[in-house]
View 1 (cartoon, rainbow, N blue to C red):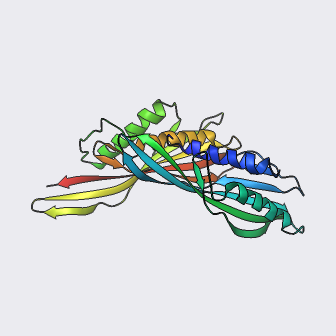
View 2: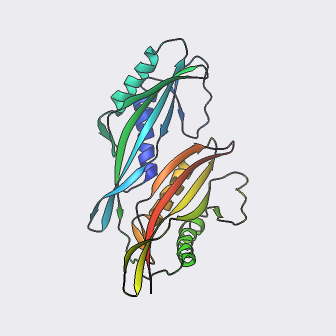
View 3: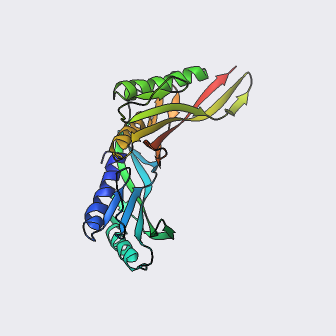
Length: 284
């Protein structure tokens, strides 16, 4: 199965929709979708957490990755009516998404995390740990030239993003310290930046020293509120694919991961793609 965050998230939501929402039935508020609770009627707020991704195999011509995440169901029932209905909904979720493999997703042991009272609702939180495996063709034609300055490093990474994301996908992009206004009318856009830590000495002696710098290319992706997460996650997949397990002009990129920040303003829903990298440089 080709590795895709969107494929993973769609499979999880589809199972929840068919095995829980339709089967119980219960109203569901999905991520970045418009939903207004009906007073006195139970509902579930369903979200999918961040995906920490690891390479688990590198076979002939392709790499296999595993994304670990969890699905979270916040079960809301009216205050004062006890927890019976909340626990019945939780039992339905556990039966559908506990210790089962379906559509490429392996669901592990669900657990109740908290219960609380919030704005007239008694809320029970159920977490479902899971993982998803997918493969990608290993990149070919890797460049081996070494960048020698931080300006060169930044330019190489930005050019890669500009060519394969901004230009190829017509993605509106805000660059560091450049004038930018979000699209109007509102559509999905991204802010791209590069972060580095201090270099550390990994080899020294004689007349030369080798230093290693660790950093990350970060794409902050913003979608208008209420349109769902498809556009943002599709763009995140593309960004991760550009920088996943590849070397570009001596810069070694590792396995990207995504972080869902959700609604941060009254206009935008956000997720971030972090693409870690390392590079060495030698001084005489």
